[in-house]
Length: 587
Image (cartoon, rainbow, N blue to C red; front, side):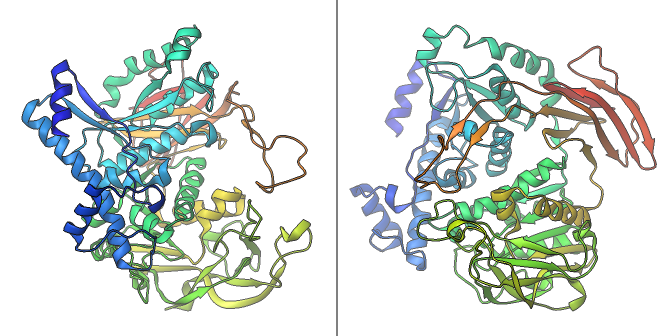
């Protein structure tokens, strides 16, 4: 690679941007050239595996070695650049939502060698509103805060020769900006030549950025909830189906986003180094693989007053994916691991009143599970209704128990898609609370994040929200209003900068199907439209806790007038109307 670096530096460039190497560790896409075979045998002393055997340490070491090849390549390029030109930056396209998410681990491992992360977000049109902002936060976590360039395509889905809607373009670019990234507008040459509308939608956004960039340069995200996006757990726990782990994580992200709480992703590296003090709550959603250092830092974090939320098999593996006999965080969570409850469906039954289950009645049953969308060789997704079978150290901390289904599947919908009714209640806890030192811990024995991500039902959303508030107390800032906007808040020296971005669009995903293999369809089952219209939102409240607010002003609109109301320790700022986008400075 040194020769290529020398060649490109002859052209007076400002940077080198590497597209995804696409050298990923999965067997079906892995390289078996002589260089790799020889290097693998030299470094590990064994021949390169040709079949995936996740249960062996040999295969997992080989999997990790393939990551390291990427990292070593980036390191060599960076060192060459340092020797030849100090001003040329090195960027890497991580494509954070593609390639099973594997490149996020490359970014985490190579964060000392990369200057800029290019977060290609080509999945945007297939993902929920807020996806670009999510990928920026994810890339910031993986890179340790390096600049993130996030892309919004000029086109819809794969229709490269024509423009998507102006709303989709504007809001996508703004998503990147409000999350702390820098928006890139991706245009293919065909559209640039033949579609004169290609630049019209972006002018207003880049004028906004020009007006705001002096404020955001030194802005620091307000910390409240840190959600662990564990690359180790996705690889070692998810294996060939990493979406099982990723869905657990994203369920928490979008639940808390809908409730307008300050949130960030954090990386395994943050746990390993103990950089946790800024967060009031940490979420470990089925984070199966943790290092001993991470476990120690989490114990210290809770003892000092932090709140920890963990689910399912969190901490059942060491950092190399070796299965352990007990949860490493069992003492902190107040439980002992006894095994797993394997069941196609389940319920949880509320055992007593508690803040975490506020809004639910004692004895209420909550369905736990979902039907499979392929519905060919199985009725339910892998392990979705399972629970870790744990024993509480104190019965007082148990809020809910696991209830088994009466049958394997229900009969109220064709082919057994529907869930069966509840059967026997078990003594196995489903929700456990614990106290340690000055802090609190909360444990769900099942995969509540994954189920919320798949179903979106309000029961799971309410429990996630209640749990976080019980653990963390009142957030420094939050918002009250419809779910369909995003609040992103930043700390300045003596003020708070708040972005409000409206996601109240026309219906984007028009049709789906109970099964991806449905034979007798009424219409196309994958119709996806761009956002074409924004519906204004009225009467949003920004709620600031524990700080005196003297003045509030818009940084985009001279005619804006926002009222301030004081209620005890809370200051309420009333936003009468939100059109597309607003930025507010709270002084």
